Image (tube, helix red, strand yellow):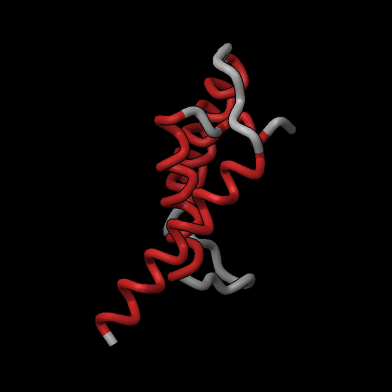
Amino acid sequence: MRFAHIAPVQNRALLIGAILFRMTKPLSPIESEFATAEEAEAYDRWFRSKVEASLADKRPGVPHDQVMAEVDAAIAEAEQRRAKRA
């Protein structure tokens, strides 16, 4: 899977947002994060369409190190905001 290719500019914010959301909302492995099977199926269709669009995107990919630096910076910024609120 060429998942690193999902990083064109408009998709990096989506990816970073998803990572930060996962950091703040722990999920139980026993229960689904969706209330209904229809919600799960709708999310699956949406996610697959995003991956397909990214794989079809002809723009050059973003190097892994650059994406990780951006994610690390976003995490550090979120941690700083959280620390200020505490």
